Length: 275
Ligand code: C2E
Ligand code: CA
Ligand code: CA
Ligand code: CA
Figure 1 (cartoon, rainbow, N blue to C red):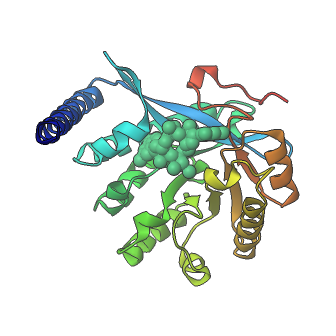
Figure 2: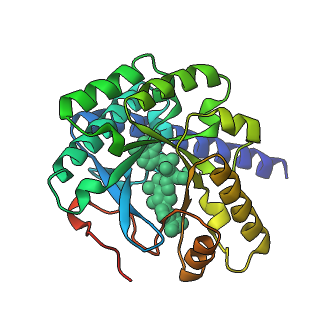
């Protein structure tokens, strides 16, 4: 039994070592990959109650030379461990703004908003506001078509500083969405203070909405809470017609999920989603 115990310890140590090595390797690869343009922004449509596309969310993808596609759930936390997240964040803003400009002469897409995810380090960074304004100026992108998605947890601790930055960008026309809403702690008075335009209902509440009555009550109250604060409500992770139907009946404004389209390469995007 003693030997087995020792073996177990050895086994776990090796496992841990392998994981550490893997992480270090990815960290190095990511640094190099940023310089070598291995990243791509995929786009997932957001539709309205008429199933018409009104915008997209940009979601980063990494084409790793040997591992294939690495998901942002893996590489964003790794990027966040170093200043690489700032580089990555800047690339995302620049790519989205360039896309807004490219679509500005397209008859349908010129109206589409592009939302991008901002990370906590990026928002807290000293040059964030200047950088976004600078990129908007350089590219000539319409600031009103840019939506920055942040989460509640990013605002913890340093709420006032974050609000100040958001105010400056909103004065330029940039809009803000509160992502993953419902997973953190938000009082009504807190939410009221935030300079945001959109609430995104977290996909965990949208899942199984057709059979889960508690979730139905939650989405209903999030929608009425959000509307009472004049916020646009976006449901994410909509996968079935039933979920779409229930959310529409509850007054939800916009919808995003595999039911309409998965995140996809720019060249595969279409002007309309399938019905
Ligand atoms: P998120 O911002 O909450 O993005 C939504 C995630 O849900 C995306 O995963 C999307 O592919 C997925 N999704 C969309 N529709 C459905 C659906 O109907 N069902 C299910 N099950 N999933 C759906 P993805 O692309 O893997 O991104 C994961 C997270 O990584 C994002 O969550 C976001 O927090 C982060 N992320 C992605 N791109 C960036 C980026 O450019 N910068 C930063 N800072 N974070 C990013
Ligand atoms: Ca998001
Ligand atoms: Ca989300
Ligand atoms: Ca999320």
